[in-house]
Each structure stands twice: as C-alpha cells, then as structure tokens.
Length: 182
Ligand SMILES: Nc1ncnc2c1ncn2[C@@H]1O[C@H](COP(=O)(O)OP(=O)(O)OP(=O)(O)O)[C@@H](O)[C@H]1O
Ligand SMILES: O=C(O)C1=C[C@@H](O)[C@@H](O)[C@H](O)C1
Ligand SMILES: [Mg+2]
Image (cartoon, rainbow, N blue to C red; front, side, top):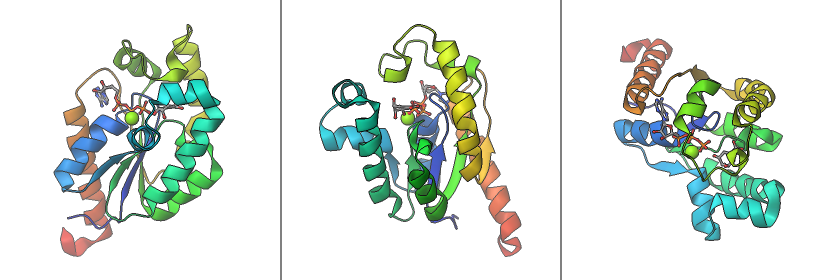
C-alpha cells in the first residue's frame, strides 16, 4: 500500500534519514537508496575525502548531479544528505518527484547520536553545538519549504520506533487522502 511515487527523506545530520529510511523501505518493500553512499560509490572516495580534495562546493556539485539522476526513478525511498536542500534546483527536484519527509531532530539529540562520529566533515571541529544550531537556523526554513510531512524526534531513542511512527503517519495520511482505502 504505497500510492506515493517515491519517498524522499530530508533533514539534519543524525535525524535518521539513512537509518530510519532503510527501515521504512523494508517495511514498504521499496528499494532504498542513500545519496551520500551513492556519491561515495560513484567517486570511489568517502564524503570526508571529497570535502578535503574539492571543498564543500565540489561535494555539492556531485550531490546535485547524483540527486537529479536518482530522483527521476520511481518508487524508491531516497535518504538525502543534510545539506542537499541548500540548492534551489535540488529542492525543486525533490518537491516535484516525490513525497518529501522532513525527519527532524533537536540539537541535543544530534549531539548525542553523533558524539562518536568521525565521518561527517562539518562536525570535525570544536564547537559542534554552535555549528549544529547555525545549520538548523539556515536550513530549517528550506526543509519546511519542501516538506509534505515533518516527523520530529529527540533523545537517542530507537530508530525502529521512529520508523514505525513514520509508517503509521504515512498510512493514516494516505487513508485520509483515499477514503476507499481506509
Ligand atoms: N529516531 C532515532 N532515534 C534514535 N537514534 C537514531 C534515530 N535516528 C537515527 N538515530 C541514530 O543516529 C545516528 C545517525 O543516524 P543517521 O546516519 O541515520 O542520520 P542521517 O539523518 O542519515 O544523517 P546525515 O545527514 O549525516 O546522513 C545513527 O547511529 C542512528 O542509529
Ligand atoms: O549536513 C550536511 O551538510 C552533510 C550531511 C551528510 O549527510 C553529508 O552529505 C555531508 O557530511 C554533509
Ligand atoms: Mg545519512
């Protein structure tokens, strides 16, 4: 039961786009694709190394090119990277090609979940809290601009619970949209 052509997950680092996205894809029996992973597989370099060699601008070019190709596929669950919404064309591509889910997380939850992270280049410097707060201020309006649904989360909780909450929300929403299916 999935009338949406594709599900696109957007939101900040540590919100669960990759983890919850993979689970929701399993629950809906849809193929799961992770944008960061595809970029790494295509270039043969980790996100951190791409940032080091080409700067954030180089990474964003690769991200936009990869997103344009993947968003054209139908019936997928696509986990984007936290900064994919920065580009206006990316936002258009997401909005026009699928159902956009904003997985949100407060900064305390991000800090707890990513405390041991050494992969995300934007977090590899002191002042993580200030950095995450600034990113939230800049990006939240962009997530809000394209989201069809927002699922907030806090604490370190459990991604499996988050996936089931999302499943319930989506099914309730689709039943409302199509009373025949209720
Ligand atoms: N809803 C949740 N409750 C508890 N823990 C979570 C939740 N979502 C994610 N996590 C944990 O947080 C960590 C980061 O999650 P994940 O990699 O899915 O984030 P992301 O949104 O894909 O981030 P990025 O934008 O950097 O790709 C993982 O260890 C994951 O298990
Ligand atoms: O929030 C961001 O800008 C990023 C999030 C990750 O998913 C990666 O795309 C990369 O580390 C940048
Ligand atoms: Mg991810």
